[in-house]
Image (cartoon, rainbow, N blue to C red; front, side):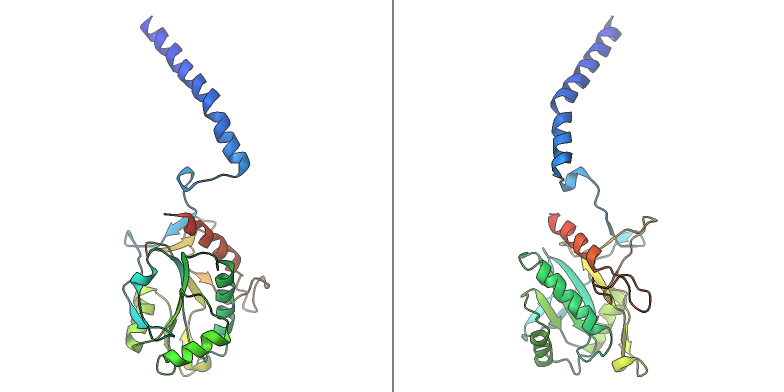
Amino acid sequence: MRKKYTYIWVSFVILIFGIIFVPKIVDRVQSGEIVQSDRMSRLAFIEVNGHKRKVPSFSFINQDSLLITDKDYLGKVYVAEFFFTTCPTICPIMTKNLVELQNTFKDSEDFGVVSFTINPRYDTPRILKEYAEKNNITDIDWHLLTGNRDSIYSLAQNGFYMVANEDEEAPGGFEHSGMFALIDKNGYFRSRRDAANNPIIYYRGTVTEIQEENSAGEKEQISILKEDIKELLKEE
């Protein structure tokens, strides 16, 4: 008899749960209300040897001659790039895409951009300031940083795992990737997963939203970068 009553009690609890909670869950799904705790983020952490990659500490001078460090970005979702102001090829496209992101998230105090120059000998704060004004860079949390060349190259290669070096044969005399890195509010590298559930790690910054792909066959990824920024902005 005790076993019989146990089954009756369990059935009663399930019935009550169905009556009270299932309609609320259905209503939330239908209304499009989704909270972070309801689902696993589609954005992966980037790991090396089982440890989540975090942006290493840095300290450089921005276009207003102010000292900016990695701590200034804590609590913000931001996009990072390596560029130089005299770049004749991909940098103008990358800057245009970042300005598009700036304008998309202009009302968000938790969004920022950081641009590290790989030609600090020429790209002084004054030059960076002129570049910012010329390209309509207005976000107070978009810092164009310059400083010690070796420190910048070490940050690019050992911190971001991005190409950044001098190359006489490269356009403009410098070689660098056309990628953007996405960083969450806690300073961790994040990215969308591909079809095989692996992180894409970086987002291509060399194709505009107007293009589906460029002449090299590189796919446009600015649209998905916008979506992923929006998701990270919701995280605490």
